[in-house]
Length: 472
Image (cartoon, rainbow, N blue to C red; front, side):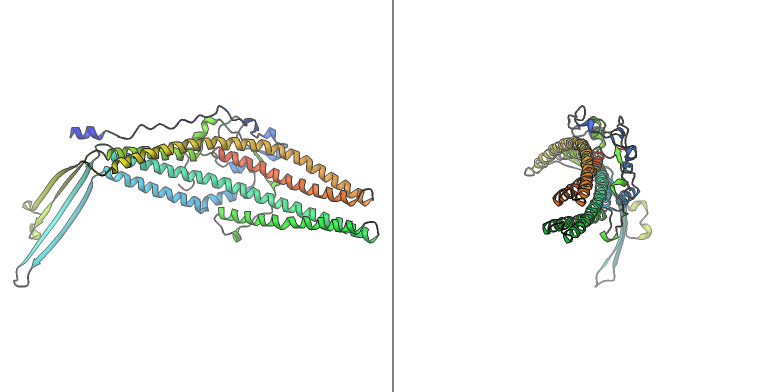
């Protein structure tokens, strides 16, 4: 018994060591981190995290200052079926963990019955009664069952991290899709406003043509401009409808059930966010924690396959009562018992155990590479988002100037044309430039707002290891 207890303390699971990932000392594009001071106006800025802080709100999207967006994210987190499926996978993993703990305990079974026998040639009938209890227990000499439980627990943690990662991706998808919808609405308004201006100019050209002050060529060119501007609207409307359907799917709704307020990107604030330190990123992203949990589960499986090479000892015991008469069943002389121990040692299996062990080791090595690749991807995501913030801010500033000048040029061209001091070609060029500048400005604004969401997602969205995902 002492030897058994001593061996029971053994474990064939290798000591776990998380793969080393060289974290950069700082972000290359750290200067691109947007803070309120870097934003053009105080009205367009809110703070998601202080510049020197390493924390991010777990409701980071509220910094956009849009109530409709807040409601949509919360709806998605409650009703999105991909996230709900991830939650159900947690339930499955929890049940599997409980099942993995069962072999550490003895099994107990009870049985009771009676039998009656006889033949057709005599009237003699034999009746017997029995009741019994049996117990079985496998000595976990080499820690195989404990290793299996350790792996199941790690898999359970992996499912929790996977749900948190799904939740984070969902948050980002809702935010970026909603912002895209707002930008498409703004671009439609720009196109429709430009179409009206083009139609007004066409009316002026046709009047001048009737008065002999414009040529048929002028009329044809302006009609072409009107048709070209009108042609941009169906394409934008189609993109709007597609993104509206995509947003409905994220919210767990049929597309026809989604109703949006008539909002604009102007109703969305530009949040500020600090990237924090690269060394803390590995603990702040649930996908990295999931990769680590998967690696721990694979490490525990190596212990399971190692134990398969060693003998197992099974203890069994049974006891009960048996009697030919029910009234005598509980008498001492009716008692029966049986105790047994069995040892099973592997001798030859055609290499099955070696193959299982080799597979578990190879699986661990594979997941170690996956972990390191996931970590490097996380560093890349942050750098890309920081660079996108900087470039989109520069681009928006330049396009704002371009749009202002294009509007001034169009106003002046229309004035000069009315006074006969400029030809129609000047007006047409100004119209095209103004439409393109305004449309590009809306897209640059969208890119800047989405870059903030991408950085929040890359930083883990405020998730913490001690934080349970919604609904868990």
